[in-house]
Image 1: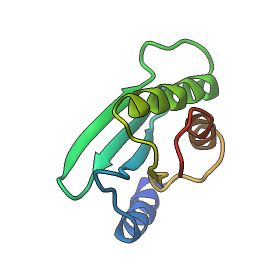
Image 2: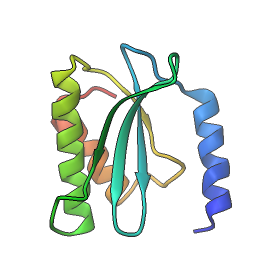
Image 3: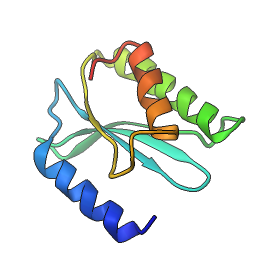
Image 4: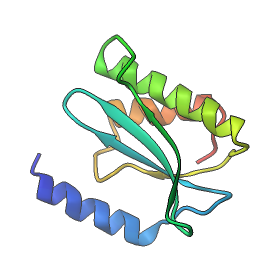
Length: 110
């Protein structure tokens, strides 16, 4: 995938959505080896929570599911129940979909 096309898609997505203190934006970023989930309050420009798969073993999809579960658990500990999902310009399938569905199962509302 051409990175400039992904960045262009992501800019278009971010122009339409933004996160608040009550409903932060869940940004998903992935590399060839790892996946990252970040909760962002766009009004204040602050990162509220960040989770990565660096200490998790298994396939890439299993790592993404565990990151989704961890994000849901830590967000609920901070009393966050609803989020805005930002797929980062990636297609909604594979690891991105696995992370989103695991976060939903963990109790987050999109």
